[in-house]
Length: 454
Image (cartoon, rainbow, N blue to C red; front, side):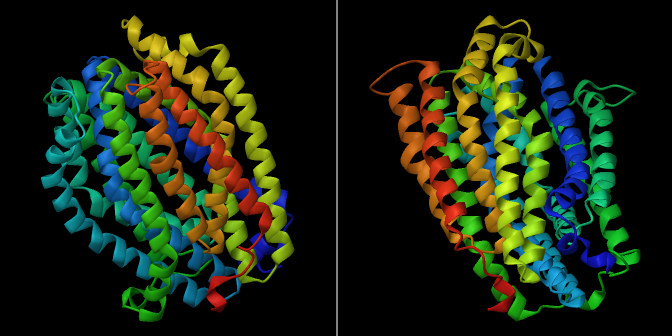
């Protein structure tokens, strides 16, 4: 058996396990870092937690613009790899790397200037805004670094080498966990930088990880296939495919980001306690990413390579089995979190009863809807592997702009005035509706066509 073609040759569940286990470990490391970050920032008070939660939707606006590139890169690299055209596969990866890094510089500068305006426009409370601006501006300056690391890791993932991704992420997350308390509280002779320290720790970790990953790809390569300098020269036929596949993803991601920015403003209407509770309540669900995220990330690679090899039945089989596994795992995880929701909330902010109650309500109300959100995430993975991205763009726009923000306002600070719990109710209903639509699209199967054959 060709070792480079193991993804298309081996059984679906075995392949999903081999691809997914390293991704699962990687997801676990990311969750540990996220929880550690929240733990240390929670010791600074509710304003610090709220500041990070307030600035992330604004940062996500820019990251969303790059998201389409990363996902189009995975589509093209995986399908060319599955078709056995390894040279073309790495050339597609090289185009992704150059575009992402070059785009990151101007996007970072623009974000640095725009962040204070955005936060004011969405009505982030004054006691939160200063910290949010500080965190956001520092993070924005590292968008080129972010583009470097995510591009190279997308190439590894598309080619089926998730073990290397796990090792690189382990280095980055370990650095982040160590640097966080040092930078935030000023240990070992460093000045206490507070919220700024958390952002600096993340940037330094990403930079070191990115340099290591690029060095490995150009010297050792993937199964002997190395990234060459010639792969970085513009290939306009590939660039055209990048934008055709990636633009709908970027639009859907930008729609998500802009929608979450508006959502942040709606939640801010209910005060800093609601904003902090949103972050505290949402973080535990990221634990489900350890398994669900690994399954769905593996699904994109399996679908991409099998469509490239024209194994259409196996691509459909992978989509169905991944969906069943993801929904089952999520259901068990949500039920567990609901039963211990108060204990989970107290772990992050033990001395604020109001935030604890709101966060516990979030877990109770939003929990069941996460099962349907996983159906939507499965559709994203299918779209990412197949390159048929327009349908998920439409679903994403529907979810946030025509359902979530409107319903959240109506049930929360709007006419129905159900308070903070009303915010969570509106968000849950949007997950339910769009999850069912996404399920119907997966079953319909119009995505079973490789885009590299166009």
